[in-house]
Image 1 (spheres, rainbow, N blue to C red):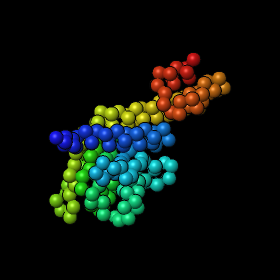
Image 2: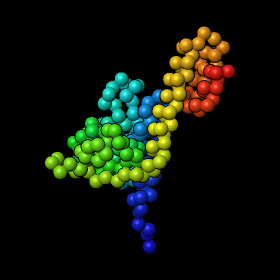
Image 3: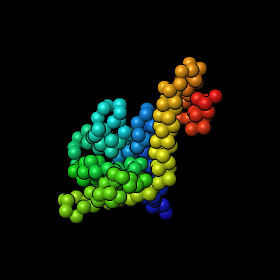
Image 4: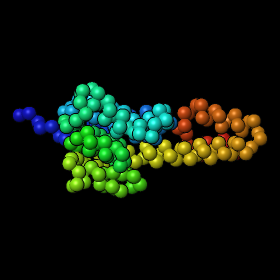
Length: 199
């Protein structure tokens, strides 16, 4: 007897790929959000935030993936696609998802400040629109949330270190801080960063 596919296991597997994209974004200094477009068991598009890289306010992970999937399929209607994203889509991305006729969206963490999937707006299932999206949320929620918290926590520390360095006249202190930046590409602990400056 052939085992039936488990959609929850598939959701975990594809969310892991979206998380890989989020980590790539973080390494590049982008807000760590990743997305993946899937048909059946095949990933047809994957991407991450590129707003800083492209200087484009619309270059969210979901928008990158929707565009790539549309080009690959040769059509704008993505009626067989499941879209995985590490955080709840914003209003812009939710609108694009509806316009692209994506039937199912799976996201990890909710976005209480800008979410378009129920947290702030409910665009994805708005009855007045001509397309409504099936939603699944909370897939690897803690990991998706923590990668964002870590990124913004590290950025706050980096900003604090930079501010301290600018107010100091010691070349030795500046050199130590620059070494932290170069060696760790922004991934460093708050303790080690601040202690290096204070010594």
